[in-house]
Image (tube, rainbow, N blue to C red; front, side, top):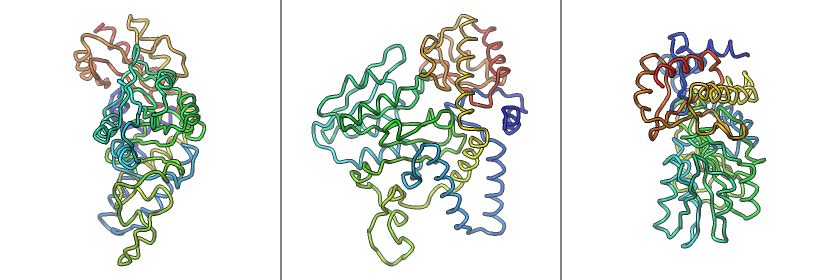
Amino acid sequence: MDQIEARKLFPHIGKGIIYLNHAATGPFSQRVLDVMQEYFRTRSEDNIDDYPSFVQITEETKDLLATALNTDKGRIAFADNTTNGLNLLAQGLHWDAGDELILNDLEFPANIYPFMNLEKKGVKIVIVKSRDGIVSAEDIIEKFNSKTKLVSVSMVQFLTGYRIDLEKLGEACKAKGIILSVDAIQGLGALKLDVNKCNIDFVSCGTQKWMLGMQGLSFIYIDEKLQQKIDPVYVGWLGVNDGWDLLDYNLSLKDNAERFQPGSLNSAGIYALNASLKLFRDFGVDKVEEQVISNSRLLISELQKIGITPFLSEINHKYLSGIVSFKHAEAYSILEVLKNKKIELAVREGIVRISPHFYNNESDIGGLIDGLKILI
C-alpha cells in the first residue's frame, strides 16, 4: 500500500478537510468504519452473543500489539484509558516512606496524578524542570539517587513533540534497578517502540490518538519481572484461572498480564483497534514512521520560511515526532480562522500544535502554510 491508496481510506479527505490534529483525536479510517458496521450488524441482527469471535479478535489484536512492541502477547492487557493503566502500576507497587519517583514539568496530567496520589504514602515526587520545551534523558538521569524507585515519562512530549531517548534512559534505569514506565499515547501508531531494546518495564497507551482507534480503550505492557512485584488493585472473574468455572471461587490469578483484566472489555474498541493495526501493518510500520518524521521535517522547514520558529527547529531529527508546535500570542484566533477553512489543529497552553499522520502529504502541509501566511 502506498500513500495515495492510504488517503482513499480516510473519508474526511473527500470532505475537503485537512486534518492535522492526531495528537488530540485520530479520525476513523474506512477500514474501521467497515469493521464497526459489521460488528453492530451482527450484534443487532443474527449472532448477537458471538463471544468466541470476540475472543479470537482480542487474541489477534494482542498479537499485533506484541509484534509492534517486540514482546509476547502474554505481556499485554487491555484497560479503559491511559490514566487507569498507570494507576495499576502506581497503586499495585509496594512503596516505602522516602521512596522517590521522577516526573517532569511538561507531562500531560494523565502521567502525573496517578503518581502524585502516592505522596500520602510518604513517596517523594521529584519534578525535573524543562528547558525550551525539552526534558532529555540526561536531565532525568542526573536526578537518580539511591532512593529512586521509578521514572515515568512520555514517549513523546504532548506540547512540543520532543521524543525522548528511551534507549539511553532505559539503559540507565536498568543499571540502577529503577523501574521505567512510559506513557506512549503520543507516540505509538506514529512511531516504533521496542520495549526490550529500550529496557522498558511498563507501558500505558490509549488508542484514540495516533493509533486511530476509539476512546475508552487502552492497553498496558508489563515486564514479567515487574508483574511479580505488583498486586492487582482490582481483581475479577476474567483475571483468574478457570474463571469460567463460575461457582468455583478460586482466587488464583493468571500468570500473565491478563490478571489485570478483571472483567468485560471494550469489545467495540478492540475491533476498531484491530482494523487500525492491520492498516499500519499493510502500509508498513517502518514507512509509517518515515512518513511521519518526513512530514514534521517539511513542516518545520515551511514554518521557518514564513517567519515561525517551532520549538524543535534546531534539534537532531532523532528527537522529532509527529508533533510540531509554536507559541503565538494569537494562537486561539489562528485556530478559529483555520478551522473555518477546514484545516484542523489544536491549541494547548497558548501553543499552536500541529500533528500530521502518515497519510498527510505535502499538499496538506501546503494548505496549512497558505492559511497561516494570511494570519502571521
